[in-house]
Amino acid sequence: MKARTLAEVLFTAALFLVLAYAMTGYPEFGFVRPLGGFFLYHTFNEGNPGLWSGSPNAVTGILWDYRGYDTLFETMVFYIGTVAVVIFFERRARLRQTRGMSMIVSASTRLIFIFIITSALTITIFSVKGSGGGFQGGSIMAIAYVAILVALSKGFLPQLKINVKRAHLLRTLGLTIIAAMTLTPIVFSIATGTEAFALQNQAKEWAPFGFPAFLGLRSLSGGSIIPIQIGETLFVGMGFTIMFTLLTLKGGDEDGDGEEEGGGGEKKAGKEAEG
Amino acid sequence: MIDTVINLLLVFCILLTALSIRAKDLLLAVVLSGAEGVVVAVLFYLLLAPDIALIQIAAGVGIATAFFILVLKKLRRYEEE
Amino acid sequence: MNPTSLIVYLPYILVVLMVAICVYGVVFKSNIFKKILALFFFTDAVNLLYIIQGYRRGDSIPPILLPGMGLSEFTSRAVDPLAHYFVVTAVVIGLAEIATLSALAIYVYRHYGTLETRKIKELRG
Image (cartoon, rainbow over all chains, first blue to last red; front, side, top):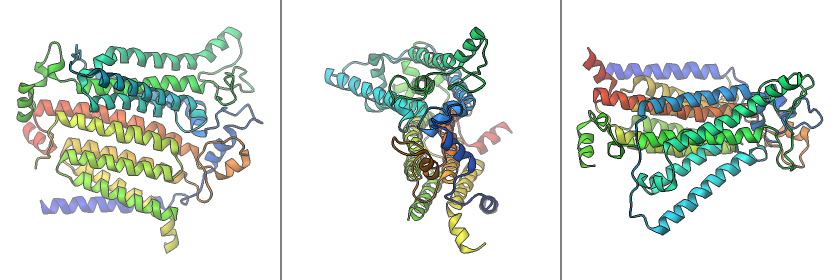
């Protein structure tokens, strides 16, 4: 046992030394590389509309314009992760509504829920102007669900009309928005015979299709970025909500097959019997 | 000045990580992971990444800690040896 | 290596120390839940590496163009947005990955009744 611990520590130390030596080949701390400078220069360069993304926030511009395909496939990875959890835990489950919640608690919780959802949407919509975005808004939307789960009980969720089916529907709505914004340039290209590519945002010299850069207001710019971000918010928030709902359900909450819950530790079995 | 603060916070982060990986009580490890997430979020803010600080607070601290606790409810709380 | 360059590289070296500790947790810890937790710390460490690499020393600002600021001033002061882009998606994807692994861990616990990989090995052989 002692020799084994020594071997583990030696392995970790050797790994640390190798990695630290590799780090000395990095550029110095506090220095921006030329590629980052390129994105900074072009993302809101009104003098060069062939290369700009129309978003003052450079991170958002890269997220859904310059490296849009990358983000699209990251979305697919998240989709597959959600599907994996759904496959493991999907049951014909329905949460039972608990009683005893007073009117005041119910109303105030509903109010707080609406506040959190509103803040998530605000962070999403104004992501081109300040900091934020689809992933951030989606995480905050999922926080609303966690807050209700922790502060009250899961029997309270049916009162807010949250269930897995609705979450699936909203998630599909988000994905539909993303797909529609992705495919619109292609449809335009087929209809008019001009060049365009999927997920195109602003017009290029060789591809004349482009979403309007400013949505009426000067403060909301970014072309297709804002609708796609709203779709991403719905998708990420509802994906986390589905994961949480399925992980929270226990034997007592289900309609039918409760025998799947058995076979765990003895402590857990006792808890199951009580509940 | 900013270098010193960043290095100190990184050392703090490493300490929390090591403590969390050493802990026998898995619930304590999860709580320490939440603390580490907060320190990382502060580091992101100091390194001028407000986007990342937002997402780290929402996803890395809030959702991840709640998720780990929910999973731990279905598993055993203590490590065996 | 002279001492000044060591101070310049100190944030990198500290992050790498954190990576080494996380690899220790993933490889040598016996509990599967602890392995998942170490993987979570690993994503945090790698995200920190990206952000530290994109930092600009001096009078720097976040990569958001504020109204009234000239483009050349913005380009010469803002930090690297590309590193931030990678981390935005990496945090969420890391969390989805953790969720999938946790679901698998729950199945392992239901099947074997334990989470220790050493004990699972004994059960099989």
